Image (cartoon, rainbow over all chains, first blue to last red; front, side, top):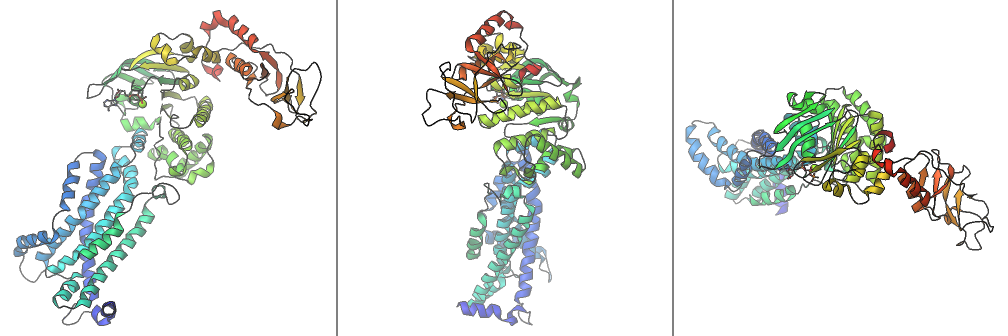
Length: 252
Length: 376
Ligand SMILES: Nc1ncnc2c1ncn2[C@@H]1O[C@H](COP(=O)(O)OP(=O)(O)OP(=O)(O)O)[C@@H](O)[C@H]1O
Ligand SMILES: [Mg+2]
């Protein structure tokens, strides 16, 4: 079986587009595009919101509310949104399907980014904040020069976990007539072509690992050594990611 | 000069932390606020740089009402040191120290040069400059905290229990260095502590607060020890205040006796006229310790360092009576060793003689002064 999956993946014919089938390269690009867009929008919404709530201490209920979003059944929401939105779009565009998919992915990504950003700011040592204010930093300076850099380890871990979830979940785009790596999984299942199905799963997992590695490298060069303690005692917890990769990929 | 004019602070929950506080912290001096936990020391201090706003009264710095100045602007001109230093964990030591100059828009290179100077000035190894706070001990972090507060050379410094989170030995060092620094810099300092010994050691004047934020007494350390105004202050100042007050009493020249000595490395002396204890000095006539002639075994023929009792403290000629008395009490021979300011031996004095001096001073004890140079 493993051999067959390997053969499927290794066949150059499967990577290129043909008259009848879309190849791996194109689907991979589509998948990356869905995910990148959703993550970017989620980051633009959740990061400033988390920073401001953490800094002011006001609007904590939003964090709790966002966390309840995690409990929504993804496929159910997707179907519901499609039923509501798709009829408004006619013709040969994908927009009617794209919008519900992106909404689902954005909603999925927001809670981890938001709650980790909030927790990062909230966990800044009160003595550090006190010193920052006491030396004459304005509220904005305290946020941008102290609270944000000190929160980065947690923000990164939230964003990385969101990335893994989104990459794994983006396969549901193929539940609707859209592309992405989920295509191989759904088609493989429908055609009883198991090497194709498992091959699709392997590609999703591979993409998740590569994305996580890239983010790890970015993190390494943006987060101060004084926080990561790559020389000493203090270590910032960064636990979630490994378990998420496996669990999420397996769930699909 | 910092002036409190009937300053009160009532928190929204109704707690009155400070009540009608009136006092002046003179320029160039250390004013210590001391009192039991919850008496409003921190609240009073933080009202000076507007980290807390008073609910009544005014605070003036050099006749300028602090509430009339923009808070951030005001704070950049006031050094602020807190208990756990509150260093920025993501910045190196040098960048931590340069924080306020950066805020003021000082050129980066210049700010760092100044920071480097201060790092050395507070007694830190310059190699620490590139390290991060988590790589430093608590005492070292506290030094960085002081350096950071000094970086923009503010005329006023506020310090909230800056040395209370370190062990007693380090605390002592930090206090000594702080006094040395202050004698060079002459800042106007308000210093908060709950430790009366620290208050007496560091303060040019000490304000004792009682719970509810009332000023119980404002006085020099010597006055506080010799004439506490009421039961509360007396109790707070503590039991051995009489002995500690001797710190502030000097007697000019002590009349010393000649002391027989033997030099380190010389043969063990013998003779009927010798006492059981003989003082050992080095070649420069600096006392090293006492030698017990009775306890020596036959094999000990030369005076070597490992035979010495080193327990005794030394009194400096011109120093305080407390030093003199302590030298007597701590000396195994009962004779207190008196040295010159360059640490060379002058002679010895007995506890009875010191007590006689104390007796003689008694009527004048009330008029002792306790500020400035006599403190050290
Ligand atoms: N934000 C606040 N809200 C309500 N009450 C407060 C607040 N901050 C302080 N208090 C109260 O005001 C009083 C004085 O507090 P403050 O922190 O000034 O004491 P302190 O003398 O510094 O004590 P400590 O030696 O324990 O630090 C205390 O009774 C405290 O409980
Ligand atoms: Mg306090």
